[in-house]
Amino acid sequence: MSARLTRQHFLRLLLGLGVAVPATVLWSGRDARAAIVAVGSVAKVKGTASLLRDGQQTILKGGEEIAAGDVVTTLAESRLRIALADGSQLNLGELTKVTIAQFDFAQETLSRAATFDLKSGLLEAITAKTAPGSSFVIRTSNAVAATRATEWIVEAKKAETTVYVLEGKVDVAASALGFRSLPSIDQDKAMLLSAGQFTTVGKISLGPTTGPKASDAKKLAKLKAGLALD
Figure (cartoon, rainbow, N blue to C red):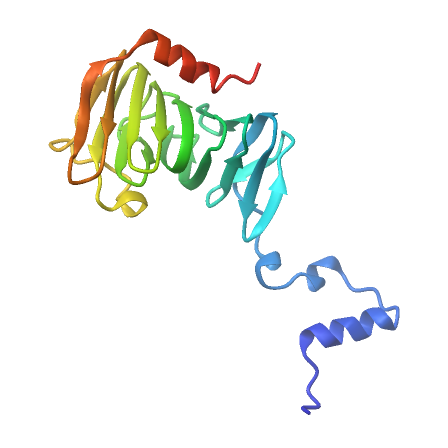
């Protein structure tokens, strides 16, 4: 057996002897990293929702900070609202899983680069207006949708993605790379949706299966009800 003490054993020995050890010394590995850079916070929770960060899962109650890399999940009959640093807002319906893949925002220039991966479920984005050249992208397993300032809803199912535009305009494109897609859209290959329109992207071999078509008022009302927290 090696006579060399590991750092962990050494610290345990000090604690056993009653020696005061600063908390910053006790932290190691991932716990020694700098405090997270918050890109938003949980504004409201209805039902049960959780946050996964560095392998640690936390039940959300409201007020928690959100950082890039976090995975947020809602259970059945649950809803969640995230307020982002640029003034944008994300509303999650039930049985929804979203990863904050990227969120960079400069208050001085109002420039933004944001990417969210919607693994499943229903997500509404109310996107704040920022500087020209900014991006706000939602990726699913088979589609990429991007905008700069608008209100839109994305519904991701196993084999298809449907995008509804409530205000503004959104570019939508099928993607064989899914969540590995670049956080941008080739304008020449994208379908442009305006307010009151929707499209559905099916399996990649089929491309966009519908749209742009006029959204049905009853369908939109049902979707909005599924996102309501009041």
